[in-house]
Image (tube, rainbow, N blue to C red; front, side, top):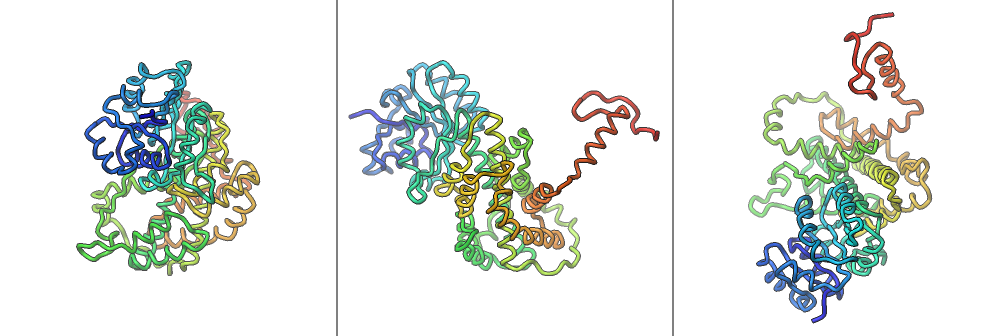
Length: 470
């Protein structure tokens, strides 16, 4: 039997799906798993595709099953597990071999691993994979980092298994070292914001207008035919229409109202702050998930709530739609600004238009808006900002009033809209010809002149607690 063109280590949900996708596209795939008793059930699941799959019981067999230069994709937990795998494999590998981390890894770890292998002849790739199990099996969106050498080996395979948008494969070599994992991190950050912005509308209509879940779901379903068309809007409509088979009640009324997170949204906010950028819409979403996890606190604090002052009716459905569009544009604009800043900081030369294009199918945030974003970037971004691109600037001009009205209505009703409010505040601050930082700078200068610590010189404090009048 001939050797495999690629190996997949890790037969969990994503690894199994990717291995089957590769086999279905005509590639020979070597597979193994830490728990080797997973291999036989996987081969049974593969059915006729098992003829293209080479099982291996040990790492040595796994490496030997691959055609040099070897390409190995690891779908294992990020962190120490990947470092341990590299240490175990190094004695078995040869110059030109490529190891690919396809999990949601911290791009800082990816950059460190690339640097550690420098000069060894081995190549390390961080590859972001979006689309969940369904995408991995039938066509994900993939963001590939690493060397040109690795991309040359990997490209025929990932282009074959990727989702397609009008025939264009949704995969690209986005840049060196940790670029692939960074782009995937920001993708997930935008996903956090998008999910929160949708959830905020659900909360407004449920708690502010008394709408039931099926009615809200029907509203989202109707938005699928316009500029709000997206995977997340589509599945939201389906979720809200679903009922619990045991009680007959809407699913959203019987599941635990505590949202989990895997860290990528938080990483986006942390890296944005390191780069001196704002990802406030994403931070609002991360915060909302954190607050939701404190279920017992929310139950105790519920008694502290006072009835809101009468604030009138909530905006009409068309206004809510425009508000969602404006907020989504702003959340994407923040994400792309973070990508641009990282590209400059790390010398990645990210192609932002191509990134928008590979997100148009296969991934969780696929939407009609990404077509407009890709076109706007290709036309050139004034000051490197999406909100200044003519097409998006005009759409914001038409919809920002709806966003403002929705935020005001939510505040009057005493309902939380953290991502929406943060996006609106960011946009308002950027539009100020003269910002409020003049006062902040004056405060800093005043403190410095009177013996107070300057913010840019930690540890320099001296002088009285408050300056005396001159």
